[in-house]
Image (cartoon, rainbow, N blue to C red; front, side, top):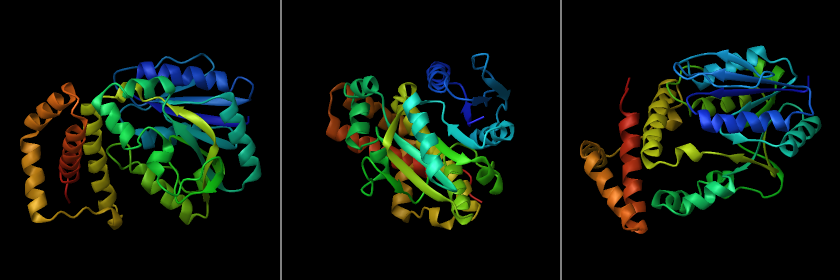
Length: 301
């Protein structure tokens, strides 16, 4: 067995079907194990016969990844999000790179599929994402990105994370106490680094990040709130560097925006209808700040 791929999924049937089809095709030439972990309490994913499907409903993505890792038979693990499309080239490249590195965690580059990029250009929200460079890993990563290189990174993310099973087991897997996905990916690399692992980004190879079902402004704004809720949990766990402090005037303003959120959201729709992108982008930034404030302050301890 060369590789065990673990894919948590929850309520994203159409996107997941593309992911699992691409995964099966990309690994057809390998001795590969594919484990899908269903986190949904309502919807059952459909998988090919050769794929192992286990149930872990309602326990969250960190628990799902840990459950999949317990069944893994290969020396090398690949944690894969349910909206990542891999290829034979990306898998072969990942396996070859791990042959050259010891105790390494590796992320490849990702980009939105070309068709999705084209669709984004047609909407105000899509143009907001493109303007703010949120449609590529490079855009999210920032100025220290190195093109077409294998380079060391300060952290790694779980969208396509390859790691030796022995190293994963040594740190005890993912912490399962977060209410929503997001900051388990902050906690996990911290513990990996403390255990002596080295992080890499390999921009010589790309995978596709197929978020075609999440190109909705309300979904995106709600996700900002969920991530802020999880950030608060991380702060309560001791990650004090994640504390958000608000000046009294700013807290009052953000509370007011949340109280009048329906009006702001209606204004956002009008700005989009009239293609007033500059004002639209300013408005959406205000709503992001308000949703983050709300999520962060929901569960103070």
